[in-house]
Image (cartoon, rainbow, N blue to C red; front, side):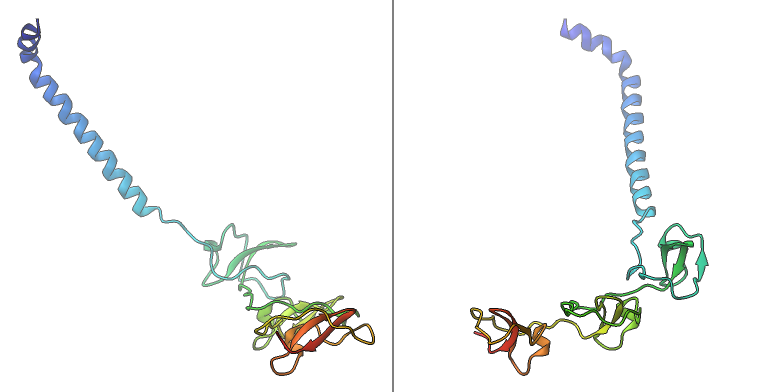
Length: 180
């Protein structure tokens, strides 16, 4: 029976070979086409920086949809007036110090870290924003809280303390002390 089947298949070999060849060509074309599509459709990453908190410059372009619609390094940012292209804002390293108990000047003296000189950051002062030296963490750690004669905040972060001293908790506030 098997012999008869092979004998009868002999007249179909040209058609079977043609079918296999065609199938191989289709698979090869699909692989080549997929590789071509993958190389031409590169992933577009957003531009560096982030959108500023406030619009305080004249936009370079209006009606953008994504960063690619904007010239040079400008970013597409949404404000009350709609989507516009503006220069990016950058976040400087470090953290804003803890706000002091009293509130500061009720004015917006900066809107981003980019507005501040040197290492200063644009930080909330309790009522507005102003350029402030960033929170600094010195080496070492604070020991157990020490008793103080009065409740007070003698420092707000390690950067407020001289030399290698750290701003450590007391039983009622913070004060500069030698690290452990």
